[in-house]
Length: 381
Length: 92
Image 1 (cartoon, rainbow over the protein chains, first blue to last red):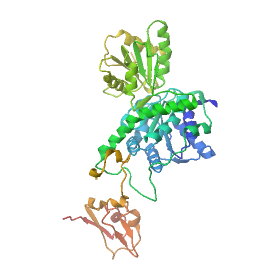
Image 2 (cartoon, one colour):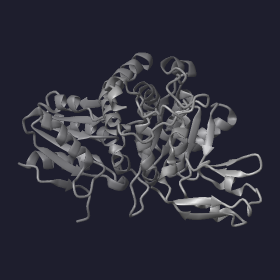
Image 3 (tube, each protein chain N blue to C red):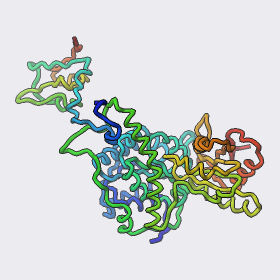
Image 4 (cartoon, rainbow over the protein chains, first blue to last red):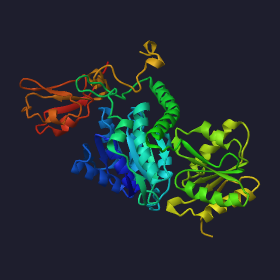
């Protein structure tokens, strides 16, 4: 049934239909309404799950890890500083190979204090062994939560679904909510896996001199996860008639300049490139939906024909530049021939990235002979 | 153990073959708690506070399990009768 809901409500409704057994969460703007709504579902019986209220995000993740280690399907949601507080436990979740699903509402990290959209919070959790998705619409957020349970339980890795604060989280749009039985047929109830068992107690994740071997297995699982994400997306498309791929190219076949970005900025880029196309400048847009594992091969394939690549990051790593730009540069190294990559930082702390911003970026890329480090858009004069 | 394992046979994560009873943590200890049974009134606070289950209630006393006791000293601190003293662990 189609409803006009916010992306936070899309998360809550998708989680309800996935029938998790344990939810542990701590409120933080702009995520709070996700878990408030889930708490209501648990209270009024729409969701048969244990909702654990905890004293911090660190505890929320600890509770999810413990519950997941007993075989329960679990969920939590957080944002920004809350995600940062979870950091050390994120490594435990992936190292123990637990299929936990988490929604992270992207918000800027302090200081200065800012509650609006910025991808730096989740991108700075890049190396924690979590699969990461970046969404563009309420419907995609909804669908990605459902896909994430299927993916995580297949590859035994935790999944983080990212949506930008306010731009998605508090914006209402049409979302098609399938029936419970439709979701059930795509995502069966949590299946038994190797878990803690009171009848046969063991210690999991304890000290071992085989450490490097377990890390290698984690690496292998991550490598295999790209294919799993693709296959599950294809299966999802068969069931629900909606699919997204791990990357989303738009007019990339015949373009001179390729814009690469993640999240909602991609939509604005597509609208602007349509205008440019009429005036004869062919521009493509590549939205990266799956960030970890980074779909290197797919990205290389799309960018292979580009004369110039412009990467727009709503995030940055101080002392280096945009995180996605670094990843893209590293990936296209695989092509064995150089493509100039122009790096742009825009929209930090929820600053609007408008069509004019995109035009500035396109014109700068078009008129500049050689890339000259990172260009910041939207600074004071 | 390394010799017996092959990568493909390994579980996805480190799982012990034993319960934590197999981890004999007593050799971590630098301070050894000594229980003076003359002073002890068997209140059981040491047993309740021990973070490692290294104190076990017996028929009419409490026994420190030196195989597991890490020597944290919480029992000595909590004992209202001062019946537990910490002494430097002597090892050969």
